[in-house]
Length: 401
Image 1 (cartoon, one colour):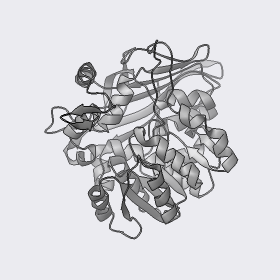
Image 2 (spheres, helix red, strand yellow):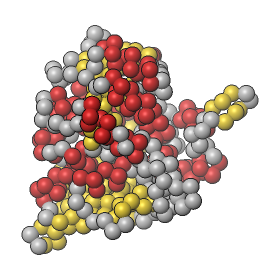
Image 3 (spheres, one colour):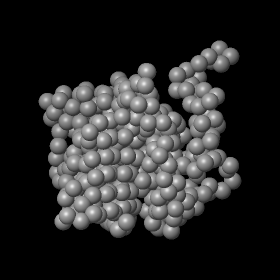
């Protein structure tokens, strides 16, 4: 397989590192706006011919198309912040190659009732074009990271093997990771974190369909495995809620994230000051987006691995019935930062996000997953993915609740 990797931040680097030992991966083009960064990752991989570094502007669709044609790639892998999804997604369609991302096209809140009704939902732009992708015979595999991605596969696995009837699918994410030397330092893209945490969270119910609620609503304490323990989680906008009900029968779907009081406080302050705005404003004659300024002021998550300690857990809580009896489980994956740094040289949060994408490439390359159109992870047989998790160093667990 030949891949154009657009975006060589923390997750992009982890994708390349995890894919490197796989002989079926013929080529990964490390394309980034920051060429120095792309070359830094290339140097770590020590195979410049197999991992060429290229400059690219992900906002310029024509440049992505030119790069894909130059290397005759089979797949364009989007590892950028989702603000760039449209040009990358459209470039893959025009070139006629498969596409994959880990976060779908952005939402726009309802103009009058943002905390009650959906406006433009996550992924609407992509799903509206599914028929065109089918007619062209190519695949857009959307939302294949850890969450969304692995968690969605878990939902499908639960439906296939563990439940006769599912009442609720709830993605639950928590960690005990600490970062030395920083009072505030997100371990993932702050641009994406602001987007998903301050937008109205989406909930799905069979009787109502998709609807929204207030950010950080419905707090609950969830006990995570792996020694992480009890963490308060709250509603956050996330793709799983938009994906799972399309392919998995359930009565309710939610996503809750363990953010912590300090993190929520910082996000609320950014919003109050307008620093979460992604639209450009003029500052002393220079146009700049406030959110980009915030991101530039914070440390790069890709370079925090050696300062991080602890574990992160991602998983799917499922409540329903089996053989007429009530059943409640949590299917999860715990990633230890020390293990991830030792094995791949990448911190746990980005490594956990990246491995699913590489497994997806593996299954596509070997014809195990076969679909066309715009498809979420739940549309595929979950068993081959789950079987490969151990081989890739990310084993899953199932906890009876």
